[in-house]
Amino acid sequence: MGTLRIEFTLYTGQRPRLFENARLVGSWDGSGSYSSTWSSVAMQEIVAEDGCPAFRASVDLNDEQVGWAFRWGVLADAPSAPHTWVIATEVADARDTSRHREFVLSGDAIEQRTF
Picture 1 (spheres, rainbow, N blue to C red):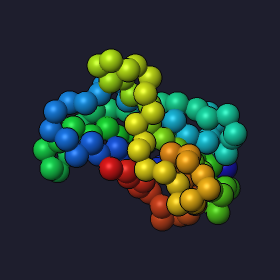
Picture 2: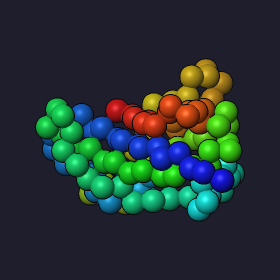
Picture 3: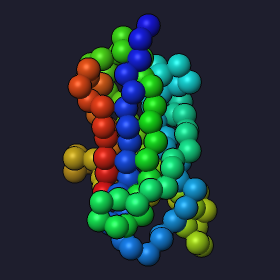
Picture 4: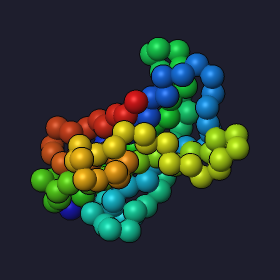
């Protein structure tokens, strides 16, 4: 089994530091295989190209699962709301109010971003 490294970035687009302690969560397990029990990894705080805070993390996913759909999101601590889900974009389905990002694993899908 090989792996594909996927880099995830959350861009805040806001100069004030809105939150800290960001954690990437996604539908994979410790070996990088799809799982309905989401796992978590700490994200590194960076300064994005726009000068605003952003958060980045990488995970290695099982390359035998190319073609599988994976979901992900970010939890972070806001000043008055620790452990807050910070993905604001709803999925593209009028009947579903879930707020997560999704991608299909492919050999060239090496970066996932959200704003």
